[in-house]
Amino acid sequence: MKQELIFMGPPASGKGTQTKKLAAETGLIHVDTGSLLRAAMSEGTEAGKIAKDFVEKGQLVPVEVVAQIIKDRLSQDDVKDSFILDGFPRSIEQANMLDAMLKEIDADKEVSTKVIYFDVPIENLMERIIYRRSCPACGAIFNLKTMPIKQEGICDICGAELVQRKDDTEEIAKNRFDTYFNQTAPLIEFYDKRGILKKINATGSVDEIYEKLKDVIK
Ligand code: AMP
Image 1: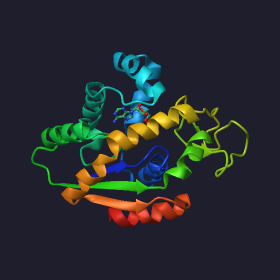
Image 2 (image 1 turned 180 degrees about the horizontal axis):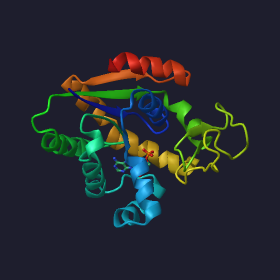
Image 3 (image 1 turned 180 degrees about the vertical axis):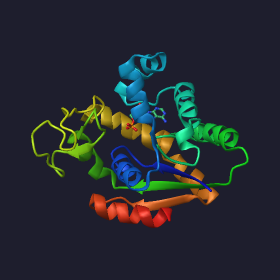
């Protein structure tokens, strides 16, 4: 049976870190719209050029741009049996688009879909964002306060130079939270009504959260 996992939660709720861990352990493929958009932006594609302004302001990129990127990605062979979708959908409109896309892509397949909601008190998140550093080469995520790195500015895993995402500043993060509460949070009820929402308390250490995650996706 095809396994489809959709991870949702506010910015910096730990979805990316947990997805990477789960993907490394299980081989499930991580499809992440934020990374796909950042890649399109650095390659300078048409989609990337449109996305840049929105990403840098902490707003949602126009739905038709994201939907095309995600449809192309979900149609590839490596995700035909399972995937973890992180960062999409981010609005009811996108959720309806995803339903239509998957209806076509999955056709007669038997599918198990679970939506995992990472529940974290909002007051913990701003600090996570401001101190977050990411590796542009291997995608690892660090936090200067809670996950100190061995050599300043250098990725512990692959040795590349770490960056602070342009949208990981306090000012832009405020917009990202507003966007989340206004447009993305209504999806909690949307998926709960369908009976496919699994909520995890995403506070605690990475390993503690990972155990809770494994429990709900069993
Ligand atoms: P993330 O890496 O998930 O925090 O996403 C970074 C930024 O990419 C967001 O603040 C949005 O500007 C954009 N983005 C990511 N996913 C979507 C989406 N599903 N719809 C619209 N914009 C998105």
